[in-house]
Length: 104
Image 1 (cartoon, rainbow, N blue to C red):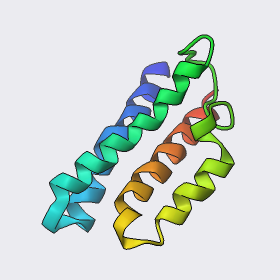
Image 2 (image 1 turned 30 degrees about the vertical axis):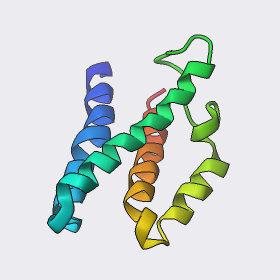
Image 3 (image 1 turned 135 degrees about the vertical axis):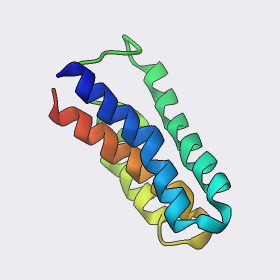
Image 4 (image 1 turned 90 degrees about the horizontal axis):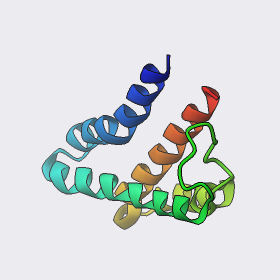
């Protein structure tokens, strides 16, 4: 069961952005994919936690960049063409981490 959780988690972090980039940003899909992958940098806030990694900890509302307030900002990015790809990547990241919390 744990292997399934890990596969889904990383699949949504790495594979889902590829399909979103390819099908919705087909002209610039490579750039869109790279930008969405770069949104995983919000996981740097895990460095503020002790321990840094805990497989049984829900990231949502624990880490500063994984709060509902941050999610509101990420959703706001969806409304502007210049920040839309970043917004999609960030919102997908939070959704992925929230789904991961359901397994705990």
